[in-house]
Length: 225
Ligand SMILES: Nc1ncnc2c1ncn2[C@@H]1O[C@H](COP(=O)(O)OP(=O)(O)O)[C@@H](O)[C@H]1O
Ligand SMILES: [Mg+2]
Image 1: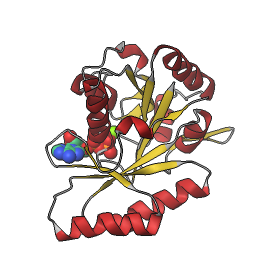
Image 2 (image 1 turned 45 degrees about the vertical axis):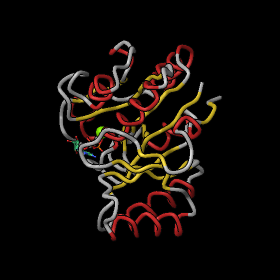
Image 3 (image 1 turned 45 degrees about the horizontal axis):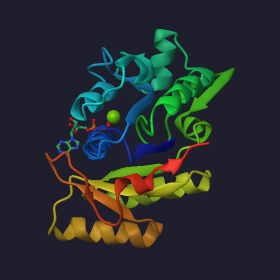
Image 4 (image 1 turned 90 degrees about the vertical axis):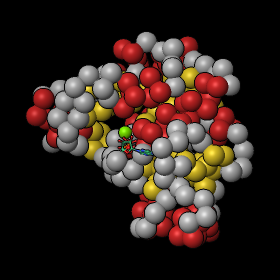
């Protein structure tokens, strides 16, 4: 099984939208793809969560009960929502849920919450950061970033942090990209130059399609051991 983790430069940057674009791209090629989000907050149900959005946008065949492990209703960082709802994530349960998907699918696309520094459990006796989940699941990352002003700083910080922490970065996807926009085009070049990673695709506003720049999307999924 191959997997990829979609992180981003922050919340509301388009991780879910771009995940849906990736999922649609792979589904069009009839690839057997699953989506998985370990913990989601700010959703009333699976259907109305990020997971439901990707599932419906890409017509995934996956059972909705396997899309995520922890759903918190409050629109807060997962660690705070978990504390207030008194329901804490377990790494064992996350590994088990991901492991089951691994057995049934060729690809698992996993999405993070917020940016790369996101506490999932942060109690005195137990701490889980989202990056611990990425490492446990042994997934390489793509970083979703907005194409506009400020993205050089946000993207480079995120990519450097991931690499510093031993997480493989497959590349960056710039969202809300406008071809011909001099700033967007320059941001793309600068991100590539400073990070030494490729902007593997861009996504335009209101178009849930990946515009690939180098290779096929499936080439960025790595074998999960
Ligand atoms: N390329 C895009 N075109 C149109 N709407 C977008 C695009 N990218 C993101 N959005 C919208 O912006 C909002 C935040 O995006 P979302 O993917 O949920 O962010 P994240 O998962 O990073 O929190 C959502 O309403 C989403 O539909
Ligand atoms: Mg999201």
